[in-house]
Length: 96
Image 1 (cartoon, rainbow, N blue to C red):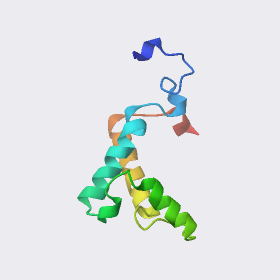
Image 2 (tube, rainbow, N blue to C red; image 1 turned 45 degrees about the horizontal axis):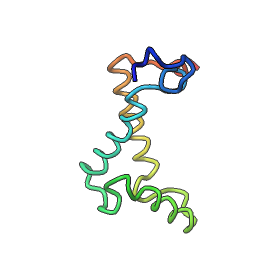
Image 3 (cartoon, rainbow, N blue to C red; image 1 turned 90 degrees about the horizontal axis):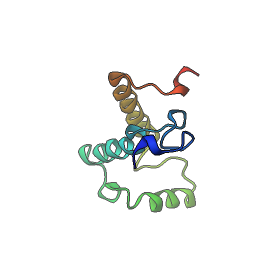
């Protein structure tokens, strides 16, 4: 679907709603690469098990995943920020 034909308020057309391939698709690619290339445990090497892992963590009272701990989430987020900076990608929320 051509972006020009979308309503200006559509999530996929409004930059203030975080539109774009980096945020919509890039996070999965970066996280997947991180899990595979950094040789994380096999039971976490894909998104198929993500919901199960979170459910188990919640049921067992954990506040942080051993599969995707906060430090790794922050590392991936910093990588995305570096990609954005390198490519001059700025969202309206960045000035807030």
